[in-house]
Length: 44
Image (cartoon, rainbow, N blue to C red; front, side, top):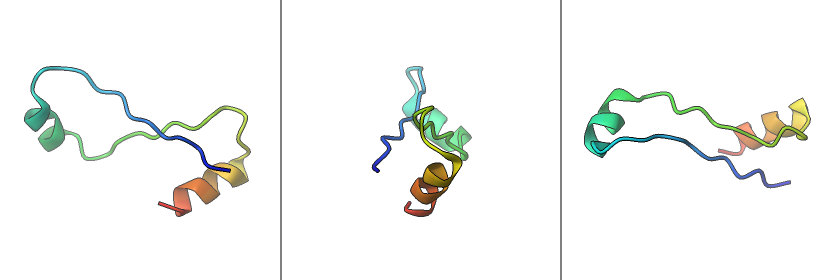
């Protein structure tokens, strides 16, 4: 099962954003089991 993680951000200063944010949240479909999420996380 291949989840499609995505990241949300906004603003005009991409360089400042990339310097500031070091922990990007990852979202998975709500219907994935905990085991499936763990497998997806370990694959990256």
